[in-house]
Length: 468
Image (cartoon, rainbow, N blue to C red; front, side, top):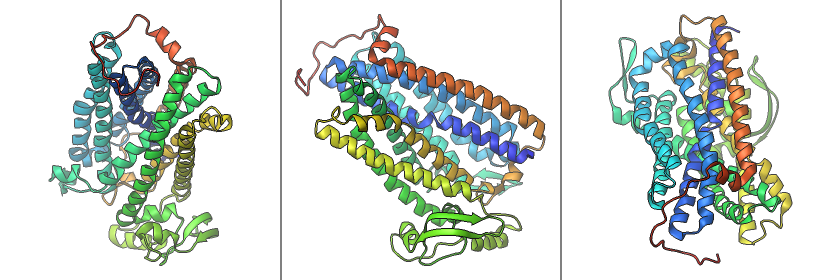
């Protein structure tokens, strides 16, 4: 493999590793803040124990997200220095704001939250977690603003071979971000909700700490229903935006070689990438047009037609992505998404019917369903990034033009193997810690934080009875 393939593979691996942790950070921080707010409002000690338990798991996940995220930024200068030189004037601004504003906010108040149980009133302590949640999600926003420039460049001018920012507001208000950020935010909530559902189901199957985990199950099921439906709705809008701005990505995701009107949706396709045609395909007539335009007609351009169009516009080259990756990534993302919608609705049905522990088979499924949002999140990022091939910045910088000129295959092999080994050990350690504390339950968390307590307010309002 040459240096370009190795550099792409290295960045893909580090991104996938990092994105295992990001959505859970985004969603679980909000859920912990909600639970602690319930403690402040009701005064019920069960909510305090819930906040400490889920907060412990959040802290473990957060630490790994920080470690894996820092490495990514170094790669821009190491492996992709030509890209950084071209777009640094634009790309660097949101990354700097993310670090100075959002990351410092979340990391500072996470420390306040960790060490402030007996030093702050419950209200201030809950406010600290809300600031962590806000900081985490603002951090994601600025990262996605930077990524949106790669998807849909705006607010720039080419000066002496470099992209120079001419309109900061246009970069921040990039049309792509209005679809990408809500999708990521809701995906984080789904990840946090299914994480909470699965662990709660595990303990409810064993009739362990039922008060804690029944309430956790109730909260998570409601959030899972709302967020999973919102992910699907926003994903639909995002796909329609993609048809307008990156039609090649949609064509690759649907294995659509020739333009069609009305366009058919692929249920299953085996393609011939060399000859650019289908070998075998099962397609539903008109459905792709419906997804693209909310009507049963409308042209969706195919990869062969777009290839000819891009050659005329950008010059000779191969502009067709390795379609097998976006095609199956799209189906993995959508399939996992619909599975989560079905499971979350059934979980909420169990809550409303007061039969959570009367459905042990469903609880067992929910334990394993923790993996579903991770499948969807990873598949979504693979579709987003691989589907943009051959561009680092769509329409401006090709992959080979963004690669550092001084890196060799040997250097990349050494660093790639090193990343895989080190990240593998870190993943193992993280899973071990999460599994240990998740299985141990609130009692284990209480034992590890013994001696801590919080200052009780003189009088706490209660929205429910003490018997609830």
